[in-house]
Length: 361
Ligand code: PHB
Image 1: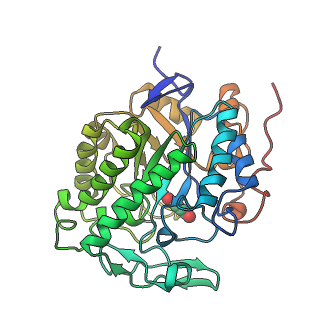
Image 2: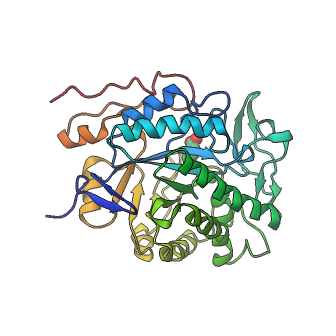
């Protein structure tokens, strides 16, 4: 019989009881110090039957933030808060990776130390708005990073990875997706550098690969994943030839023997926009290793993707917001709770830890 969502799998250092992954989900409910606290512990604890939980993106330094209420992984209070989360998940026999996040130009001086400019590969402003304490404000033109500043950020990723291990995480996922700093280096709509970090495919992949190397040195490759989003235009992203750059990256990541490559097929919040042409099977073929996909999968389409070998694991985002017991619901093929988009970002336990578990069958 071919594999399905309930076929155990070896993922790097871990044997997962199923291939149902909780996708990283920004929920903006950390405390005033950007530290996880009691409601976050409860939220992750509820979802611990996932084969793997990938935490919401967590800023690696105060300069990496892009939203209010997102957790960090740089202060003692944040590490202590995350330790409560990882303890709760482990007590429930789960596994959890932390997602390492730098927002780059998708930020605003009002939320950055000393009201500095956000940073990016090039000083190209993203169309769109930051949600600040003073309300919605247009993105600003970012500061183009110097080489020494780039080196510092690579080190910051490694330090944050060590902090994640110190907080009890089983591993980390490097957020290379969705228009944030690493993705800004990857795609040529936001990277117009003329040094070794811009231009050719190899140059645009360089920042991600350097971060991957630094993080692998801290965690071991079998505790590191990387996330990419080849077709997501969110945060004003574009590329002149996505297939070329993402196939290149998939093949360049292969020799690391990472725990996994995580590719979201998500094409942005605007579902009316035309679907760009992209051959995900070709990208998957360019990657030698464990492959996780994501983006609107259902029980049936996920089982088909695994059964045909199109992917090894499937990450579920929206379904996990609304269904803490997604694994049990899939196992019994019972109806799913609908998700309430009004409570995705910020607020309290409403729409966060109060989605009902299914009635026992
Ligand atoms: C979002 O806030 O919509 C968001 C945040 C991080 C992501 C993707 C989307 O990686």
